[in-house]
Image 1: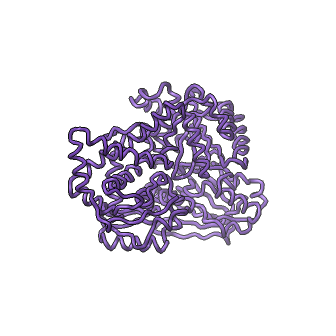
Image 2: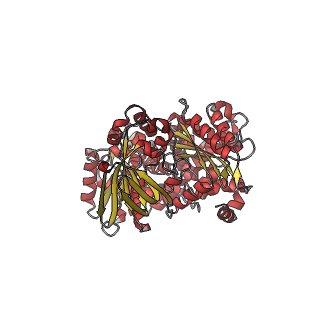
Image 3: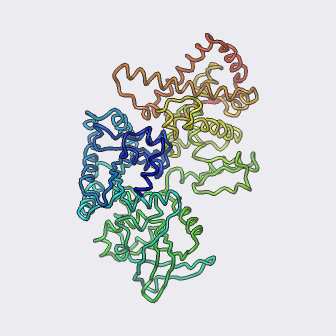
Length: 581
């Protein structure tokens, strides 16, 4: 992997944006493992003088996880425990963010404010140490001590993961969806708790494996068993893993009934009495469970509990990949998943699909759409719709960054069974047109710090379109019909002009606040600003300023006239704002 990375970081992007190979290594990791674009990766890097042993901070709003990353790009084959102690040092400092900010470099100061905001929303922290070397035997032992120390701490929900050369290769291969498994193992089973069958030409064995047997499976500790899992164990502090550990300790006899089971792909399976031999074993679903069982090893060895294993004998890599993709799409059940069968959602789905007979409203995560059956122009998605609704109808684009509150706290305010299909479609088409402009090529000339927030900042531009319509019609706390606004803009040939104008409005609002903060000697945190009501107020103020300024420039009065003509709405085109405060 080191040679592969050395070759990759010779690219202009890495050479021109980062001062040393250590930073380039971290940027490579963010881009290739977490899939960040060039601007997003650069925004995460904090390495440099006064980085407080924190090389990068990546906040995943969808998974509600803060990744604190420390990297060592060594040429040596082994690395000792010293860099691991740096991770522990950063963990100790994270516990006191105010003190951490003292003498931290400017990028880290901003990230600390982001971390603080995320912790208020109950995000987890995952400390990652990444290296192209192997840990020495002593370093590996120290890691286990450090991992347990961090995971068992009650005041911060945190875990510690080491990504060494082998794990780095596994993660990279997993990101490319081309991993292969290679662990061989003999399970000791009880014949009356095993069933063998063939399904669609695939040899399949369902068996209840004792928990104490799971502790002996190789590859759990170093993650080799989970080569197709992009994310490794999150430790016992993870909410789900805490529940698993609690059941092992207090109710292991019923563990089998409380757990969905483990999915394993093997190159060959042989069942002979009490021995089940597998070759090229790879666990494609069950990383957190087996890691937690391993972490509770002494208790598991004394238990009488079982866990269901599903073994599939598969030589066809494409079939194995399909199983891997399907099982790995099943994550912890969230509020959004619980709403997929809600009667309001089902009513909206029916309304949408009746209006667009070749369309489809995706309500469940993991649904695969047949492109030949549906017109992709009319394929909508529930999570995206929720984020659009809160930005447009609640006028709170600052809450569009995460789905938890949308589908929990604000669900009843946002989703209505009589919501019009044409409004769902209009929101989809407007946002898709916006997001096409939020690319590294940057056709709107957006500030790079703003562009780094592509996952949630574009919803502010969607909001700005509705706010612009309100300004033209002199409305306050009333919401224009999305379909009416969109149709009139498109029919008048003004939609692209409005996209350019609202992009400029958002960018100017951002840069004005940034500049004012700098002049006042205050720290400006872009991510926290975009998640606050202050960003909404700034957009509103800038719309008024822009409309006034347009009157004084060549062509400005004509633009205002055209906007006034195509955005003039009637009372019937307005509705009350959805509350989300």
